[in-house]
Image 1 (cartoon, rainbow, N blue to C red):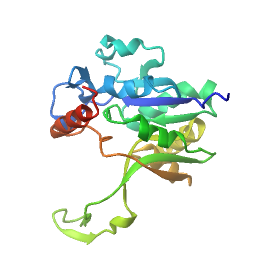
Image 2: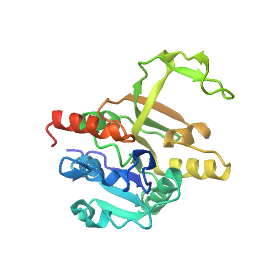
Image 3: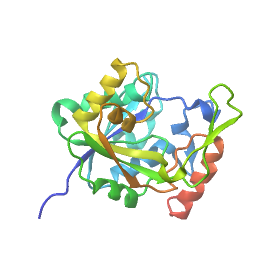
Length: 236
């Protein structure tokens, strides 16, 4: 019987979560009896195809080491960077020597609602050189683009049939993503997700259907919504 393909995961977790308005990084806020980052990591530690998880932390982070999951055999904590892209780059550099041709998933620390069902949809996609795949949702609301000089005024209505809301995990070849993020940095290009970097270097990204419960906890009201999703799944 063939052994299922194994994957690595990078979790950028060096941010402070300023939009939450809390006095603590948002990944350490608690839903039920566990912090957000614990719930996020458990999605991957419990999946048989995930071999290792690299968590990229703020250099002054003293909270992560106190969590039980920090000592899980699949979890390794390293120092992150000044922003998301540099944290991911640090994680990829950590993997690069031994796993240059391996497939890596990058996932937000504050997305604890990912299910194994959606994760399996992503893992079933074959990542080839220069290409990758991400979870995403079709946009269902009418989207207005504002004027760059008058942000309170509508410039145009966009065709939502061509628009998707990106989620994570985002999945690429380790060396491909490392090169793309380095190139974006050298060019001074700001990338808000890994797919943006791959797009900049001419790669192709496949959209895989995500799920509403895989939202990123960003605003205070997101905590209540995530609590609802997790309770409906029986996770609390």
